[in-house]
Image (cartoon, rainbow, N blue to C red; front, side):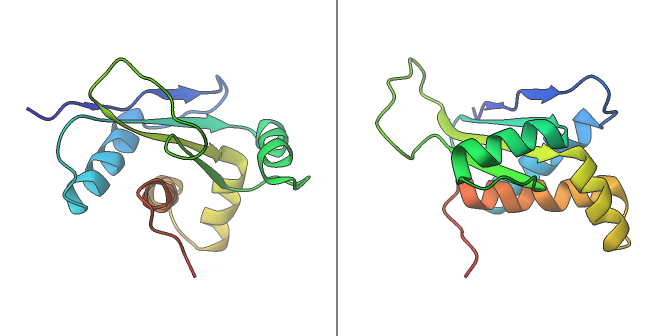
Length: 128
C-alpha cells in the first residue's frame, strides 16, 4: 500500500487550504506514476523568510515565489524509512498573491500551479 506523507508548515498569519495543497501534491504523484511510499513537505512563509532562504541557498538577496529543496542533492542522508523523501517546497504567500493578481487567477489555483512546478523540480523535471 502506498503511504504518502505531506507535512505542511504555515506561518501563523496565512490562511491556506491544507487539504487542497495535499491534493495538489497527490495529483502530481499520481500523474507521474510514482509508486511506493513518498514524503514531501510544503512550507508557506512570508517574504522576509523567503529572502533569507534565497540569500542563503541561491546567493540572491531577493524574495521569490517558490524554492524547492531536493533530498537527493548533496551527500547521502541515512534515513530510517523506506519512503522516497523527495524534499521540501517553500512558497512565499505574499508573492503567490501578487502572482495570482498578475495572472488573473485565484490564489488557490496559483498555489496548485506552484506546487506542481516545485514538485516537478523535486522529480528532476527542470525548465529550459
